[in-house]
Length: 587
Ligand SMILES: [Cu+2]
Image (cartoon, rainbow, N blue to C red):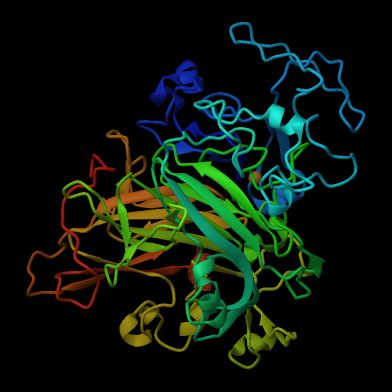
């Protein structure tokens, strides 16, 4: 299996459901109404798929520059499985030469499209407005970092300003940081800002075995950073909460150490930049992509530096997976990834245990972005609240345990970091190494080895697993957003007893009970819990097993429990009213 991903664009999983080539390519196309919008296609030998990008090349926002496509299985990407889709902003007649000495090939405009303008000296077109030298790293995008702000020695240049197309809806507005050349946000869109950092810490995945990763790397809200670093708040994947229609500012600070690796899993190396590349939503590929691709800018944050990206949440596409795009092969399997969940406009976010509103407003009037993998979503209508869970399956996770804690010491392989769990034959080799986990947590069979195998999943014998416990009351609407950003395998999410539509917006969708997922795919599982046993004199709490199917997944700890309480008085969360989920017309 491979996992095809192209940056910037998104496409309907079933193009015939959405009117085909003409309708989907129109810049007026909003988003699929029936089938799933996707930007990653899993593909196996012999299979084929039609990809028709929404809004045509460069997407609805009209982004131009080099747009990378690649296999998202990292060892495949790392060994060369990638290419570029170059979207031009001026007419190319084949007479120009790139800084590398290679020609810009001529490209004849399509006969029924308005041709782009010819290049002029003060408007030379991509990439000639970027002041860069061949063989050296390119500059950061204008306004993205403090060093390229207005009134600095590296302020936006005249050529850069002339190249801006600012916004399809407001072509005369001032360029904005993180969306300098093409601003996907309409001027009236409400603004939200996430101030967050990338950090490294020693993270414990399983307390029984003390399985831990001493070089765990992750995104974290600035307001949670100290608590996570001190151990007061357990680390979880960064899962920002977004509403449809928002213009989102992402202020990423690089707090990583420059040196990485030197363990049984990773060779010693320098990781001196970090970025956030986002899937599924709209941005400018020259300043919001989080990459250094082709002739584009360097869109990473140097050590200690803060960089701004700006994105537009133009439709309810459910999720936004994101990750570093500069040293992904080095540290993404060590936890450096995250994923936003998208919710209808007007819905608010609440802590499931306290009911506390998650939100606020910065002094400049921009909404304060919050993040949580488990959140109650309260929406303006009647009977439209739901509980949202974000689950991130991870494979190839580097992991160690202290010497002497179990028979795994039989391997006699004790390093400075402890005993590595399934180390590669050499550090950074593309082997099957490490463990399989969920949300930086694992409950391996090794932690439950001495006992009757029939009780392997029995909380009365072992207590609850270390993995996320998904809690609800009967009748609650449930939305589980499935992510996978680490690292090479496919998995199959299973949830005992419950079923859900494969395409939540399609009345003709097949109903499924297991979902295959591979790298950077996403799925939104929307269903309603019910009263399995209407006799409330019987069992009031029911546990349903979730798991990722494969025997390695079980054995290494990627499984957990969804707990449904029979009544409000049980020790649980805040009661939500029953009813139908408006995001899910058939359930
Ligand atoms: Cu990519």
